Image 1 (tube, rainbow, N blue to C red):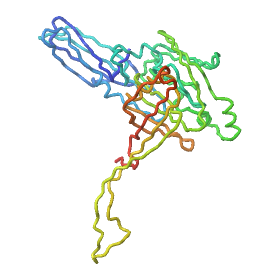
Image 2: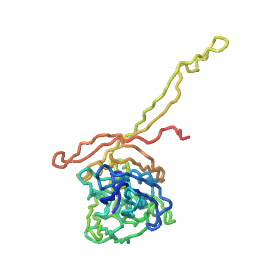
Image 3: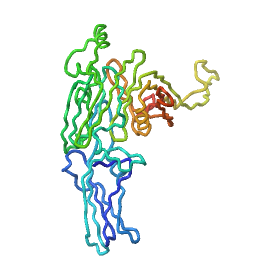
Image 4: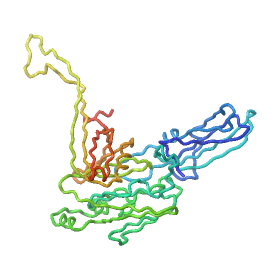
Length: 379
């Protein structure tokens, strides 16, 4: 069981003679059996009227201790939460107590699924089709609490099988698995060579080889745990004309999810500034024609980018929905073989869902703003 901290979560205790209840909340990373001391929060609440139940809503308190970051590496970012709730009567006599240690993630549920829990599925993405870029690693985020096994297939043959035992460590509760295993930094063949202390020499012949053979290509992924089996189809796309952009965001499961915008990218910049009119006459009552009369100050630039997805599967409607609902989004740029991850914000604020029945071909265009000014003004 896990708490989705972007949706409400209630801790309750009930007794016929209850007058008030206390709640201690412990939040930490690492081993589930090593809570901190003292508690981060200690709450007290009196019952209402003739009620015999006292409830505490705690998800926002826990979320203060979850800050998902991304700089190119993929690791689990969840925390443990332990609560101790006690019921007392009007004479301060302890009536009952309860407690539990639960995993907490930066996820959420929809209104129509109030009992949504990551423990119900080994796969932590909603789409059942992944569009991958040729010779670029795609990652499947999985929940390891129920000992999942992930199998990669190509043309019906098993390419790789990996099994993940359950763990008491918070960082091990989520794994980002690719055909290359769980290495956090391998995205392309060139990166895998360099990471392994090899020398990568690009050439015309090598590019022809990549055009003919794809490193680690798969067409199906199957994830099985003690509860269920989920199959994901993988469609690998080549893009020769445009430079695809990788967008990473925190999805509804509270994990990082990648998706590529395969087609046209248009970059823009908007500048805001203030101005004043200068007096450029000097002490001799003359002036220089090279001086500014109308001067600008507080000039601030903000860059943005418009990305086109290309034609995708209808299941990506849910991916776009979760991307727009995400509070943290990043774009990965590759310059001279070096990856640079930059924070962005989704500027597009509305979406009309497309279906193959109504629209035949499904393609979306989204606007993103850089989450920083063009001129460095971090002080």
